[in-house]
Length: 105
Image 1 (tube, rainbow, N blue to C red):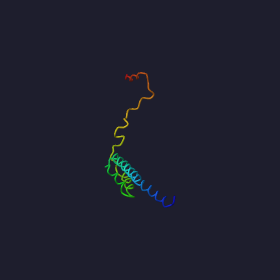
Image 2: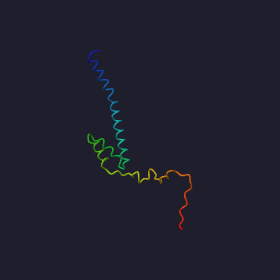
Image 3: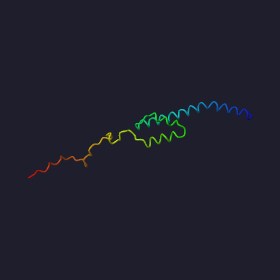
Image 4: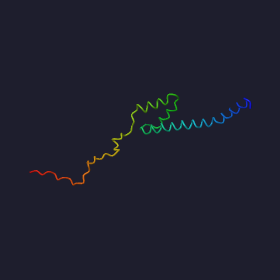
């Protein structure tokens, strides 16, 4: 097999694989946008801010700065009542009836 035939075979192989690489890259970008959309939504911001990732080079930095420095519009866990706050149990648990209150003389 001479070098010209080898070069042609490699060119055909690369040409056949380019649509697959393009599709995989497109799926990865779509997944990353989905992830940022969810993070922005859970932070109480419009999910469409996740599309900033599409801005070349600086988009990631902008998204991270917005997430880091913006006020998240979510209810803090303590105010939401989760986990429910119950009075602490008496320690150690007693099987005796409670003592009668002292009487005044």
